[in-house]
Length: 448
Image (cartoon, rainbow, N blue to C red; front, side):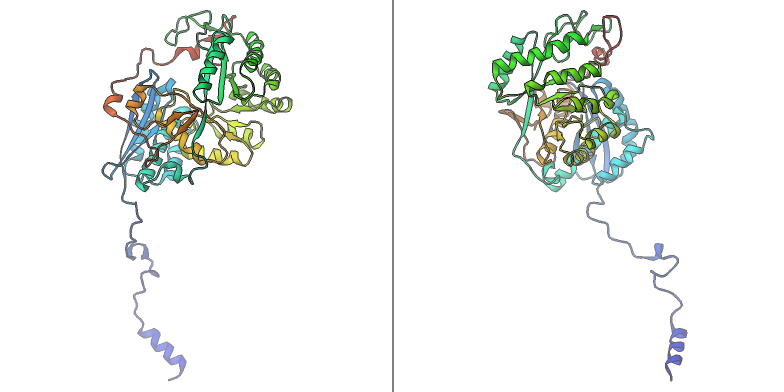
């Protein structure tokens, strides 16, 4: 039998049924693929908690999983619209997330982001953040590691902070600054009241009306010229009194016209600020090129940002020196890690927003990211009240001017739900009326 005959007989004798991987029905016929480790875990519940242990409205999200006792916490605090975030989580994200794998953090972020079609708003950003931080917390707990370890490990032992010194007079500011310095602060923000005006960040400021966040009857009065004359005098006084060893910074809070902001930055150059914060509003970011061209004062920006289009150009063109994002506004740790990585390549340092309207859970998230990014700059810090420590055991520890994270798995912070319920938020009024009632003497509305 020659070779041709052998091949012919072999073909005739071959079975008519092809192996499953050649079959047109191979998708159904192939043997099941074993589930990857972790695929069995599911999200079983998503809850929001509104609490105010320091009389500031906080929103915290809890993501519960199918593994007994495994859950995560995240900060979703948009204090001016707390109920809107609560609705976004409970009515929209929760049903979208139930049954999905909490370990697929990036995929869940992306799908949450487009789930409402319109995006990049503060309500959706905070809702996503609450879930996102909770997912990182879950991943850390499941891995038995602090979240900073998941980000690549520590780049520093602790996180340097700045705190606020303010007062009605220059002397009051000096006294407050000295107290912070005695507590170990090496970086201090200074703000002073401008008489007769509702001055941002200044203790005891009066503004021609009731300086009351609950008052919607009398507008607060603000004029920029007196302010821009006062601030350089404040820095001159404080520098003479406490010297050059302590780093000083100041928050303009977007309240002045862009051309005045440029002049103020130039006037402050001689005092070697650590940074000047929010000299312009997000709507005026086109002025940053003019500001950079005329002043060497370091600039921090981003507290009010929600949309990448607001910060990408400022970073890539090196028009700012510090990025000041409120992590929950931009969608949590997943987005903030990407922003920090971008900033590294353009010599921009991080200075995440960290006042009282960031929950202790949010502060913990800030600290874990601060520990892990090489281009960390500074962290806005605060002393937690005893009530906050009780409601949120595991708060970052502030000591000698530094935040210290514990080494517990996840974010290292928990929440006493029963105790949190004893500090309910108030809906009367539903928000802080000061932000919408700041006006010039002629009645023109002013950005807060």
